[in-house]
Image (cartoon, rainbow, N blue to C red):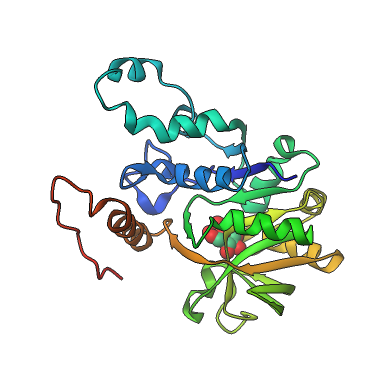
Length: 288
Ligand code: G1P
């Protein structure tokens, strides 16, 4: 059984300043829901209802969001607006939330290692809320959990990217097993197009087996002087097996302004445009 999911949310979100000066980037809304709520919904849909946040200074709003707000809920009782809170209430009822703090910003590998006290000796999911994913059929994490049940090893979600973007991602080399699955043979964190072993980039969804913690404890800082999960996974791939999965669905990089706007337009079109009573004209359908 895999029931836990880690959300590293300590990052500053400097690309969205000044919006993120006093507010966590994970709380930026895509239409009417904060980014992080989409991630938690995806996790809960996959059966991962024990949510662990690796937070940092200034992230209180995330804790408050996944909690009851008695005053507000009392105020709007009987006003017809309660329905707007149904989704988040259901999420809170179905899940548990734990928090631990990353005291130094030392990379994604370090953030995941910080979550060890929450995870213990279990396989677990990792969601980077910046990557907003809409799965086809089922959510991306649910697709990965299904594969985990079959293969019992770490799995990373991947997507094809243009070679001009390799410097933004961990990039894998692997042998195709069919059905979008690859057996990873190598991985490089944020390579130049020349260094990149393929055009298959890791996106922010992982299933990790708990031996990753011991590997991370011994992983030296890599790219950018930070402890990289990619480096630890590369060792795990050599020791045992790590798979990469070309997920079915769409991903938006909401850590960038253009990805954030594209996600907003996509969600508006998909979930709001037709039922919109205020007849707001969609910004544009052709945003690139
Ligand atoms: C992190 C990882 C990288 C991965 C990316 C996915 O990078 O280090 O390997 O491809 O997430 O979003 P970051 O975006 O935190 O710089």
